[in-house]
Image 1 (tube, rainbow, N blue to C red):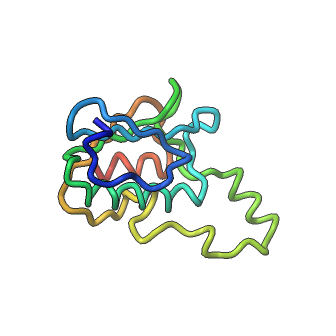
Image 2 (spheres, rainbow, N blue to C red):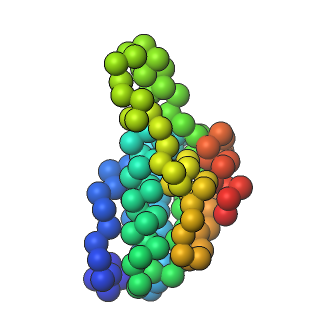
Length: 134
């Protein structure tokens, strides 16, 4: 299925992409040892992926899930947040979410393409935000 894409996805080190059927994108948060919590950069990464999905004509549905057996998404990476507090020299912009919100989803203004949350474990904090918005 990846061969039928008209454009290639942006870099996505936090996420796994799969194409289980034509027109379907499976986006997996791939941080199971951290209960799929998302560090700040991953929100921008997800925002870029969702913008790409909106503009990729061969994709019709996105399913988001979490890797592992325990958590769908435990929200913001609080260990990273603690490091930000300990080092105030971290730029404020590096700590913010994109305008589209948590994981690029909670305030997303897409092209009407559906996003389905396949919740496979704990959905805490921002992880629950993903569920509420889709």
